[in-house]
Image (cartoon, rainbow, N blue to C red):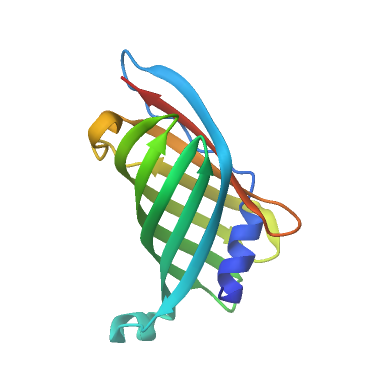
Amino acid sequence: MHLFCKILFAAMITLPAGLQSNIGAKHMEARGTFEVKVNPVDPTPFEKSMGTARYEIDKTWLGDLSGTSKGEMLTSHTETTGSMAYVAMEQMTGTVSGKTGTFYLAHRATMTKGDPASGEMNIVVVKGSGTGELTGLSGDLKIIIDATGKHSYVFQYELP
């Protein structure tokens, strides 16, 4: 994984986002682990000129949220200030507490290098993206990376 991604992910481990409201839905929580593979993609001329990097993301999810996801991430950092950011979209295919379907997660994160407290991370289910038994799904995802680099998650969600 690109050093920038490792620094950014490691610094953003405990930052929750707001939960979307879904009238008539039951508040639920899913927990588990995931493995992630991040591979660089050749930058476009625009990305080269802006100093950004693009990555393909492949994840395998285990636990209450199980399945696979694929996505793309765009990262940026400023050498002079140490500011960093990433945005990503990923499509999850699998089950959430036994209900099957697909949905999209949208990621947004920022921080200053070396200062985890400066960061903020927001990962939310894209409204209206749920299919199958996950139609109407809303929620947010918190990523946790322990000292050994193992990834886990807490997914606060609602289903009608």
